[in-house]
Length: 345
Image (cartoon, rainbow, N blue to C red; front, top):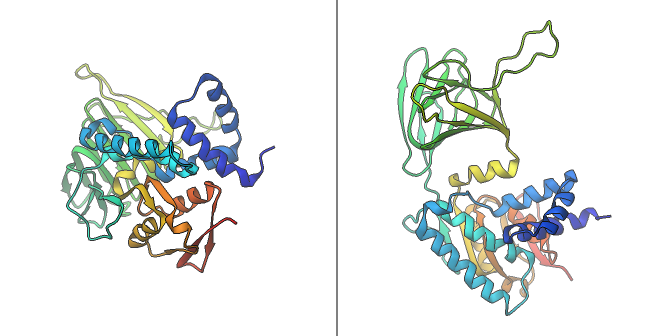
C-alpha cells in the first residue's frame, strides 16, 4: 500500500513518464494508479505547476527554442543524475514556451534563466468590470443605461464582471452570446469553434442568431417540479462548434474542467520563468522578484542544485510542492513571509 508521503513522488514520476509516452502496459498501470482520488488530486496539482497551454505549433520560433532547451537537458541527463523535477521540466519546456511571444526585457534579475512576459493586458471597463485580453485580441464595447454589451472581435479574453443585476452583461463571440450578472469567465473565438470557460459563478450561453440556449436543459428533480434554467457553472466549459452550413444552429458540448486543466487554459495571463540547468540560488532570486513571500536557501551546497523547467512566476506554492516531490529538498516556513529550503540529510 502506498504511503501518503510517497504520493507526490509517484505523481511526479507519472507526469514525466506520461510526457515521454506510455506503453500499453504503462497506460494500464497509470489508469489504475490514477483511480485513487488522492493520486489524481496530487497528479493534477503537480502537473499544474509547470504545464503551459497546448498551442506549441502556433509559435514555431518559440517551439524551436523549447526544443533546444530539451535537447541540452537530455544531453546533460546522460552525464549526471537528475531529480524528478528536472525530468518533468523537459516536457514543460516543450509545451509552455509555445504560447508566448518575446517582449522587451523586463526590469528583473538576470542570470541563467529566461523570463517570458505574458502577452495579456487588462482593459478596465466603464462599469468596473475588467477584461483581460490575450495578445492581439480585440473587443468592442456598447454600454447603455439598461445593459452592458461586449463583442469579442478576435482572439481570447477573460472577463471579471462587476455585479449589477439590473444591468446584465453580455459578451458576443461570432454567433454566441454569453450573459452574466456578476461572475468571471473566459471566451476564446476560433475559426471553427467558440470556447466558454466559467471560472466563477454561472452564465447563460445562447445562440445570438437563432435565439435560445445552447446548453443542455437541466432536468427537474420530480415530475411536478419546474426545470432549472440552463446555466454553465464554475469549473465547466462549453465548446460550440460553428456550423459549416449557413443558418444551421451551432452544436455545443459541455464538460467539467479539472483544476489543473483550468490553470493550463488560463496560463497565458501569467509571466513564465524558464530555467535551463539553472542553480537553485538563481531560481530563488527569480521567484523572489515576483512574490511577496521570500525564499532562502539554507544550505550552501543546495544552492548549486540545477533546475530545468518552466514555471508560472506567481505559482510559488506549486514550485515548492514540486521541489518536495523530488525527494531530497524540504521546506521550512518562517511565518507568512519567508520559506527556507534545506536538503534532506
